[in-house]
Amino acid sequence: MPVPGAENQDSLTAMRTPTVHSEHRDDYTAAVGAILGVYRRHRDTTRPDAPDGPLAAPTSTQDRRGERELRPSSLVQLAAACARARVAPVWVLAAADGLTARDLLAAARALPVPREQVAGTPPAVAVGAMLSATRSACGVSSGKVLAARLGVSHEALYKWERGTTEIPLPRLRAYCRGLGVPVSAVVAAATTGSSRAPEGGYLLDLTHPHTDPAPDYARMRGAATVLREQGLTVLEVDDRTVAALATATGIDRTALRERLDGYPLTLPLGVPSRPSGY
Image (cartoon, rainbow, N blue to C red):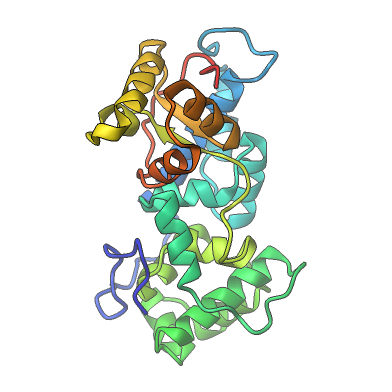
C-alpha cells in the first residue's frame, strides 16, 4: 500500500531486527525530543507575560528534568509533553518524519479505517487498531511475521494492537517503518481522523519561505526576511498567522496556506528570541 511521504521508509523485507537493550532510544526519539524543545522554548518566549528577549539559562535541575520530559519513550509521554508545549503530538511526529503538512494529511487519508474505530476510543486502542488494520492492508496477515522482524513476541505485538499495552516509541517507529508508513500518519488517522488536519498550529523553519524561488511569492520572501532580521528562526503557522501574512503581502490567503503547507516540517534547533508579532 503506497503511502504519500513514505518514500524513504524501509520495506518489511529489508528491515533488520533491532537489538533490544537499555539504550533502545533511537535517533527518532532524540529527534522528537529536539523538536519538542523548539516548540517549548517558542511557547515560553511568546507567552503574553514573558519578557522580550531570550529565556534565562535554566538551572541544572530544570535542565535534567527538561531533558527527561523531552525524551518521551511512548505516545502517552509524548502527549503529556506536547500538552505542556501546547502543540498537537502529530505535528511533532510529522517534523521527525520529515513530512510536509500536506503529505501528512495525504498519508493519513491513504490508511485504512479500522472497523472498530468509533468516537471516544482511547488513543492507545485507536492507534493499536490502526496499526492492525494497516498491517493487514499491507498484506502482512500474520502478526507473527512482523513480530519476528521486530524482535518481540507475538503476544507483545498483539497487546500493542489491542491497546492493552503501551508501545514504546522506538518500537512504534520500527513497526511503521516495517510497513512503509510514517508514524505521524498512523497517529493522525487514529486520533484526529483521516479527513482533517490536526488541531492547532505548527512551527515552520523560516528558511523555507525566505528562500522560496517562486516569482509569485517575492513578497512572502520579503516578510520572511524582516522576521529573520528580528532574530527569528521559526514561524507559527495557524489561521491567525496566515491571515496576517496574507494582509501584509497581498497574497491570497488560501494560496498562501497551501504554499506554507507544502514546506517540510523539519525544524532548526535555534530558538526564536521574541514574538513575531503575527
